[in-house]
Amino acid sequence: MENWLETDESQEAVLALQLVSEQLSHLESSGNPHYWTWIIIGLHNALQGFMVLALRGNNNINVLTEDCARKWLEAYERKDGKYPDQRLDKFLNLYKKIKSDRMQMHVNSRHFEPSGTQGRSIRSSTHFVMV
Image (cartoon, rainbow, N blue to C red; front, side, top):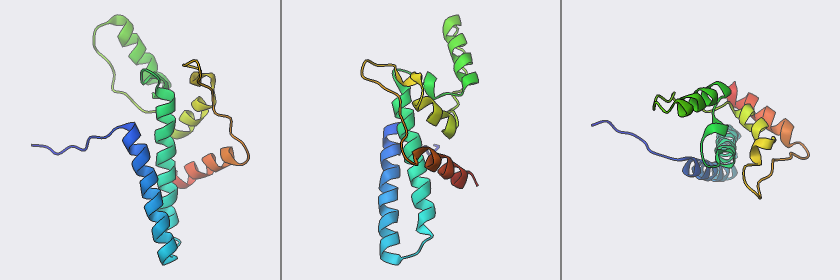
């Protein structure tokens, strides 16, 4: 029997924040600056999870790559059940989407408006995590 880890977007986002809290505690008690690596990775993962949750709405179309979303919608219209594998869009594309009208899916929904250094911080964290 194969072992599988089952999780969901909500659980992942919350667990990532718990990881950040733990790593901040280790940083504080040890003074070892290398814990910042895991803090940044955890924050990046949490933010990605919460962006996915915000964009999902009633389906996953908004969180897929453009090509995958198009192919999925084509399969849905054909009603043949031959759906492509779902591919999560890249982090910066998800960030662009939460700032766009795609967030207007519910009556009280609104797009994200970054302030201060938030946009620059997002781009910097992506560079750090991707390196």
